[in-house]
Length: 243
Ligand SMILES: Nc1ncnc2c1ncn2[C@@H]1O[C@H](COP(=O)(O)OP(=O)(O)O)[C@@H](O)[C@H]1O
Ligand SMILES: [Mg+2]
Image 1 (cartoon, helix red, strand yellow):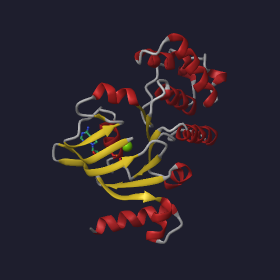
Image 2 (cartoon, protein in one colour):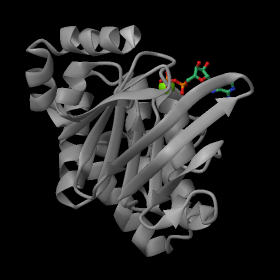
Image 3 (cartoon, rainbow, N blue to C red):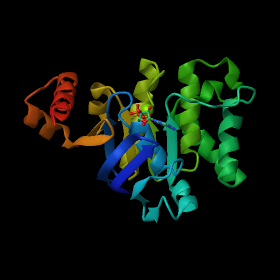
């Protein structure tokens, strides 16, 4: 479970995230929507203890991001869509194993976990090839496997489908459904409504650092009377702009 209580992040004079309060339960997939610069990445970085909130508190499965960073990091797997950061000279298996070792996973358990992830993500054909020659989609799958190697209870995915082809995106969706069924807490950011609609129980929309909507998609549709999600998204932003 993720609990955000009035979280604010300022970078000098810029307020990137302003008094955001939100809860995400286990077994829930929450879609975090917002245009570029809305504050999504900053919010996720704070959850992962990469940044410290200026004000407010974030509690991850009972652990505070301010006071229990080591415990928080064990609970969390975070994937940034834009930065893959794999070692090109290592194979896919070696890249995943390297991260598993950082988490102190025993070698036999790690080997089994890599097989499992490789099967789930359909990477068997290239697991033992060097990552350097991979397509962006293949690299992204390795990056996803790496994030999940310690079987985190909380999974933060920051624009994860960037660079995935249609086939890989569908495998990825199946993986998210599987994690949801296993009771994980999943936060998925995107600037595409369509992507969110396929996976999420609930959405949160950010605009200029503030949370301007939080609830189910059917309720959002009922409030704005739109069925086209992109149109609806624009309406929410416009309404927020008038305030
Ligand atoms: N490290 C930083 N220093 C200064 N400003 C930042 C930093 N990180 C993000 N910002 C600013 O904070 C705002 C929110 O950015 P970000 O969280 O990356 O938004 P999103 O992920 O929704 O596109 C933007 O105006 C961005 O320029
Ligand atoms: Mg971002």
